Image (cartoon, rainbow, N blue to C red; front, top):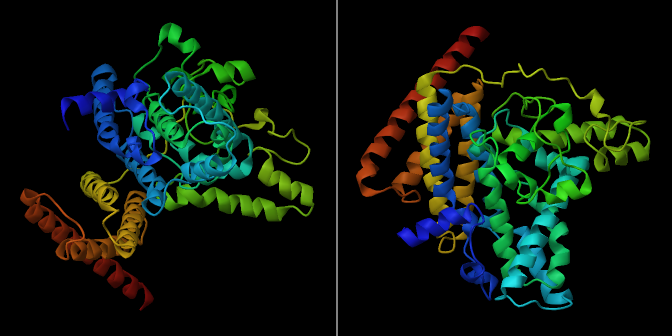
Length: 440
């Protein structure tokens, strides 16, 4: 990466790009800014960690939470391995068949109009995701962390993209897909850096921009924080539509009802099971539909969004869920997590030249790995058997060339995987012997 690309990449993270350098005639020419930002995500997370340690002497999160957030970020991008993103696909369809006029793709004023239109649309995507229970089932993933740091920004939903596309379709009547494809990515990237407690106040910018202070409120489970500050890059929409709240009492982060797990598939899908149970609890069809289309805390006889006075009270003394687990396993999970991140990067960069079978196989391996890591963090009894299976698959993928490593690291990686395989094999054997003794 040359200096020019490096500086442009950093500026992209803060929406500090000009129309001239980010305007494209065809949607195929638009760079995958979000995917290219992975090194910047990791780099800024390290910077935040160092600054917080120097400033306060304490880390901003635990290993369990950071690994889980990164895992959610990986899993949320998996569908794009097989097809173009759902938002851009539906957008192109409406543009091709229903557009009323065609704004110029290379115009600065059209670029700025699209900036406002995407951010306005995102406000309503975000607001509906909080006010409609079926949409909240997807979005709750992002709020499931009890910490607030840059890794929290990566904790994204696998399913939210399958509903958010609707809100952007009016733009497709006039704004070219290439312009939309640029701004939908920049809008998401901007929201990365506001997930931090390191930056406290930004002065006059607080009136216009969405800032870390405003977004901290949004992530809070204090009563004054619920359903507030939905903005993406701008906070003006919240001020206009009455959903703004300034930061006040100490913000306590996370879901109103804690889930106390780091297992990624459970975090992604547990709320759908909860919705199904609530749906079946009621006999009246209107109450059943209310479970889906009213707010998460709605009950029969309550306002559409529920009664926020019934939200469990917070004192500011609450501690995040952070069960103790061995330091050696933390190091193990971090090393394997970094290796998995490399597999994820390589898969995205080479997906166009790989067969669909290979892409599907590697996707399955990544999902298995993320699940196994979650099992290890949660210290589940079946973690050793699942991790043994994963290590066997990893060794096979390395041997048959499906996973590549830099030449100097090939031998160390194979040795580390072999040691991992031996360790989990012994752990599994020990568990099986213990089970057999109990049954005899």
